[in-house]
Length: 374
Image (cartoon, rainbow, N blue to C red):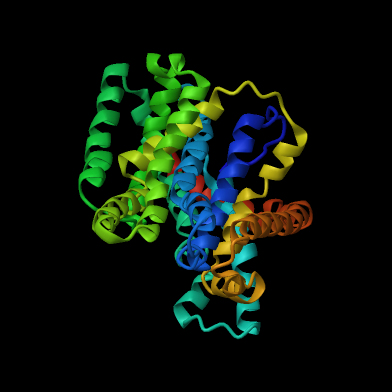
């Protein structure tokens, strides 16, 4: 996650556009799976469109990690000033609290059936892990002052470290089913940081020569290869049913596991393609992408999201309809816009009260002292 700082250069609109599209893909993925739109998509074009729109959340999550690490490497590369994660950590913590706590209270007022654990998690932004991505990223911020020293290795050793990490994490996750978990996801964030540092600092020749459209087409093709079996398995019957199910099982595994080679390479291809786009700063793109993380928190707060899909978006009323994919896109855009308006107000009026306060400064210094031990 990237936060604006006074005097910082304008945000790069190619990356901001990718951030915006990735978050919409995450919202659509949760809408189709948690709202059961994909499992109740019926048959025909609606089924295939639902599979394409509803299977991209985890690939988009990998894109988000790559984006965050890309800019984090800038702040921690050799020769940069000592990295002080305190302000970033507490701003992120506050963002999660500002969304998760009120939405948990809204869920209570709406008669949620969430258990005590999910209710409590809404008020514990880090230790409660209401949003696994946010907690894993905050853990990475605490680890980066130590991990950054690995970027000081010479080219041969850093390349070897990235290669060994790829074998241990990507290789094993592609050959055996190691699904998500908070600790494994945090380890994956640390690896992507090192991998991205290697890309940025060593700039391998293949990356410099890679054409934009080749990268984008390769990333999209890998995604299609994982997403289309979802529709094929549901649409096929007769002698091909068992084959379709077997292929679907593997594709579903790769889609779900951030560490699998198809998932990571798909995200990397799309990321590399957008990184090479020569896009001049576009104000509306930069503004639209800024609330992306708040959209993630708002639509995935544990006690709130079941009510969001069933009683606000009313997904059950869409089940089996031919127009469901179009309605889902409209709902995702509307949800994004609504959260963006509220987040803009929060950033303008509420966040400065926290970031300019004495407790914030003291807590940030405490984390920075820990980071200074690196």
